[in-house]
Picture 1 (cartoon, rainbow, N blue to C red):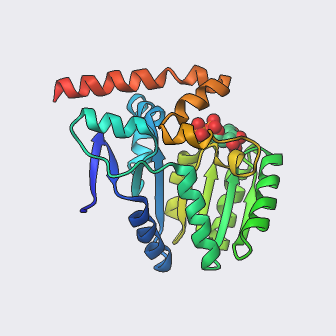
Picture 2: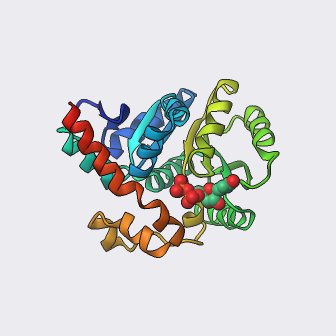
Picture 3: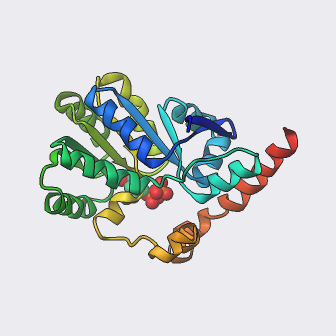
Length: 243
Ligand code: UDP
């Protein structure tokens, strides 16, 4: 099927299967093509709608992917079709597998100091052939510049940034013009999960597309932010009426 963009709040979401997308990225890594990937859920879409600076930042991405059932449903309300929901954390895991198979290099930036240590331990254990170019936790004010300089000199194949939205995207936006290669991807709370410190929703919840509900019901910080979900639906309905 032809890949095309689906628009919600003027954000272009790529409608593509995960398999096809992985092939596309594999090719881009092979050709050293600098790439910026955003995986956006309903909460991020609403944030971009409310904050034009953030919208302009993610518009610079080469690919914006639909991370979450909200985007798929929202597109449907607007009579558009999204091929597949592509959760950021799964995409990151798939890219790590590809990096491992091809002896590629990865840089990890973000999360709390103890989390990044656990993550690096797990990566070394689970992916023998990944070349870890470097890593840094996300709570040192000076690290943005330090990490930028490291990335420029080390030229990793993949750079995963786990500082949450909008910090991770603001940093990627600043770094991109200074580098000549690398797959840059903001991965939110994925380091917390992949390091084994936070659990993803059990499989059955994910299958039922209820991971979002599991997350807000088990994390009080998320409960407060969950107001974005009903707002997302209301704003999509408004967009439909104005069409
Ligand atoms: N984080 C960070 N530096 C900061 C703020 C947050 O490294 O200054 C990390 C935080 O520890 C967490 C990640 O950013 O691992 C994402 O946080 P959150 O779950 O809030 O983001 P989301 O997945 O909702 O984008």
